[in-house]
Each structure stands twice: as C-alpha cells, then as structure tokens.
Image 1 (cartoon, helix red, strand yellow):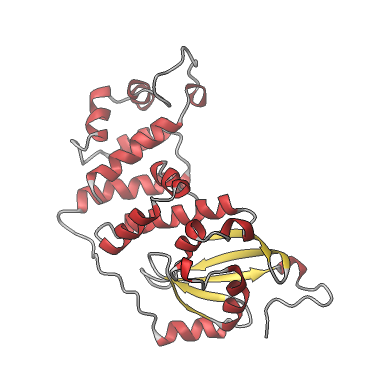
Image 2 (cartoon, rainbow, N blue to C red):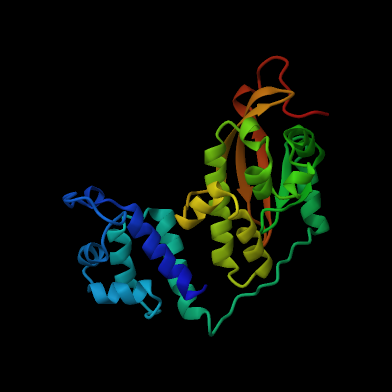
Length: 273
C-alpha cells in the first residue's frame, strides 16, 4: 500500500469528526471541517509533529500502541480498525513483500459447479473489480430485467450501480448499495495495491460524484452481508438478503436470498424456472 493511502485515511477520518464527537467544546466556527491535528494528537497522547509526519508519509513504522491510541482518538469501529491496521502493516511490508498485481479472474470448473449447484437460489461469482464472472440461471433471470446485463453495466456490478440510468430506480436503498460497493472496492485496493486494472476501474468510477464522495471519505462498512430493497419490474417489491462467500483471494461467490421471509407464502416462487 502506498504511503499516501495510510496518510489519506488519517486525514479523511480526522475531517469527519466534530469536536462534540470526542467530548471537546465546539468553540468558534472552523475554517476547515473536522478536528484539528493538534486535537487528535492530544487525544492520542502523541505529539502534533509526530502525527504530521504520519499524515505526510514521513513516518512509516508506527508502533501498535500508537496505532491503537490513534484509532481510539479517531473513534474507529471494529471494521475501520482492521482496515487501519492493514494499511499500517502494508507500509512496512511493501518493500520486503510486494503484493501481486496480477488478478486471477478465471473461474474454475469447480467454482462454476458450486454456483450451479446453488440453483434455484440465485448466485454468481464476483471478481476483485466487482465484475460479474459467472452465474446460475436463476440469478440471471432475476437481474436481467434490472439491467445488469445491459451494455451500460459493462459486466460490472459497480459500474451498473453508478452508471446505469435505471439502477437508482430499481434499487430503493441505492445509497446503502453504493456504500457496500465503495467499501468492497476499498478493501480490494488494500489487498491488491499494485493491481493496475483495479486502479483504472476506481479512477473511472470517480467520474461519478456519488462514488467519488464515498471514496474520498474512505467509507468502510461490512459489505459481505447486505440487504437490497428492489422495485422489480416483473415481481414488484422484493427484499434480497446477500451473503458473500470468499473461497479464493480474488473471487467471491454471492448468494441472493430472495424474499426469504415470504418463502412460505402461497403462490410465491423464489426464482423463475
């Protein structure tokens, strides 16, 4: 991970905190949003100069105690702490243990068989760039009317969400889905910092203001379990529970549980035959 990524995370999180969030008086109106560097340093028990060196990438080996203190000062939750620690470890290990930039985007016969075996439950395979690589018939039958196989989606769930003109119409909790996608790509970038194709995909998505804002904020949520509220053009309002399985470093199986709470209602079918 580049030094700037760790520094950008520190700066972004500091900008998102208000004095009252950490028990400080609001005081006068501030020229820049968030906490001052001196305030975070005082809360963490480190010098302002040392925090400046971290934010500027001039110190790349903070101790675990310092990382914990800064995480406390920034009020990081469990997911954010894990990400913060991985960024710090990546700075130290980059030179001695560089990551592979080559994506293994080929779906094995075994993985395809797993997805097919999940039928009639909709399931598909996502690559590290959130490209849709393989699917079973029930998933395609469910999402094709939503436009996920349209040219505008470019075979990518991320591109569909931010670039397809109908995505926000069909997905009623679009903002939650956008948070999920931004977090998944942030995690991928942390795991595969040298992947040029992933970098290019993120750059392309940053042309869309809603993605760019989430990316600059270093948004992080638990993206592996999620719920989509869909206004389906054929089925009406549908609730989809998403579970993500991660059998390989580069590939993820997503299972979509469609209206599971209504599965026993008379006449309801989960998927098209």
